[in-house]
Length: 307
Image 1 (cartoon, rainbow, N blue to C red):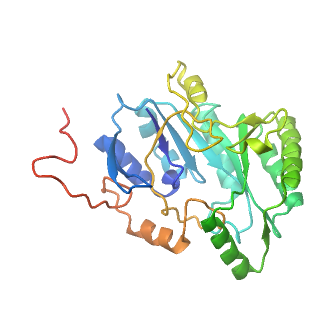
Image 2: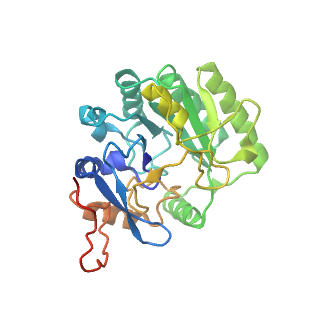
Image 3: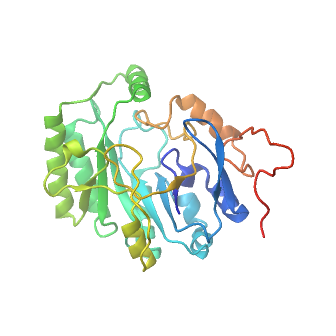
């Protein structure tokens, strides 16, 4: 079983202590994001094939890298670096610090461990196409030789995303846009040339309508890459999470509305103030990321006894 930590929140940046606490305990309780019902995920080494981390700041786990390596399972880090203005990314670390972390992962763990994500691509008065052309090229140059892949995607305008971007637009006097497909395809083609020049494979995440010749389909939960990191094959089926997703099967242990990075375009946060309040109320010893009240039938333990 591949553990995803997590597409729903930034566990490495904000919940690393909790993550290591759960590894030591051997289980984690996760709330189903649709039904709200909790279920247990076994985190003992015999049940875990690998980890995929999603983050903008891996430093809290880098500080305890020997502990993670001692667990004995391969891992990949989907590392987002977009270097957008603070009006769009209120609390992310500076890009130079994130770049240094990717370099460390490549040199200290495995060259295939870090995957750079430049997503979502947001078109706004602060980040027009010309911004992305220069910004992407600058970041790609800094990361060349330290990662082999960069995954991109274009902003998906969910209702909560539109609401949060509209709020940022009012607060910071900016405009944002969802341009026609032709503009997105043009930018994707430019990114493809820029990535190739830096020996990076450009992949596109869950948006097949923008695939171009030479632009590969992203597989963010990628058993093939993890197998190369491990040095032996992992037998994990493909099981995408939404249309256009080519990921291998995984279990996500995160919780929506818990990331306090404050990115105006985030699809995983409905209200930034709620996410910040939940982060502040988080308890490291809790067996779930957020407390879950679960009625327990008499005589039935929440978790089976460990042997």
